[in-house]
Image (cartoon, rainbow, N blue to C red; front, side, top):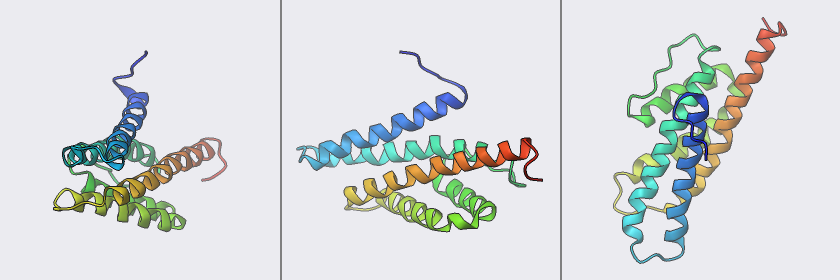
Length: 154
């Protein structure tokens, strides 16, 4: 099996792996795993890891189109999302519904790290819903850059 440790493919692979790492403990918890409480911590960590990989991909994709320096890798994925979501909204106001859904999901994930009880099904459902729009934003950004390079937009 070929592994990519650096570069864009590495980020994609690691992001997808983190999403799968969240799905495995979720499946165990939903089946009534006896030690589900301990598995829940790994589940939350996996979704946070997903954001650690997904947000730099999004920032890298947005950088050529935005006039701001998008900082990632700070360790605070929640603050990073707040900055990135503002940039996305400024570029494409029609993504407001996706941004709002991601805001809710990421806020729920953040709250779960401090909660005494967690609705893991809601966290999982909302974070899965974040995955598609983040990938869609990356694709939209690439299309805009291609159009700019081809001279279709100024």
